[in-house]
Image (cartoon, rainbow, N blue to C red; front, side, top):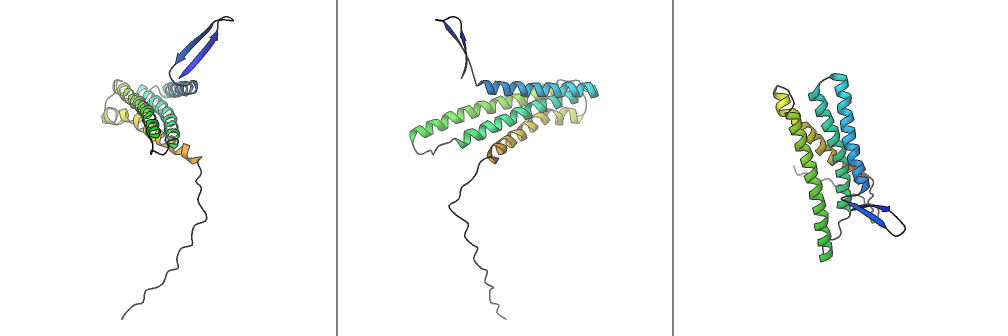
Length: 174
């Protein structure tokens, strides 16, 4: 939960609470802005609304999917050992936030499909293939974000690996 604090006077402070963190809101604005910029640029270059909307929605869902993937990977890395009651409660809280992110990402893909379908177009590709492109791009970006977050982690081993046993040839009987 984020908050904005405004000092009105020496004795009066006003607090504004908003859901989420400021950094996540900025990332959401960057996702929507980059998608809008990509759509506007493509519309300017090609004058094709279908291509511009598909690319704009795909860029928006790719950036947001990457951010959701990083957040999911960070949440998964923070899972404690699930042996006691407090750890199970923490796991439920993590899964609730993950379900919210998945719902938001799914709604974004569905809205993108509806927007693409409601454009003036004709043909099998425009009716069946292009509406799912933004959702697929967003899902792939989500997986990329999860992998990207894991690339920074290191794994410690107890020591060097044991040498492989020497291969012994089997005797042949003739």
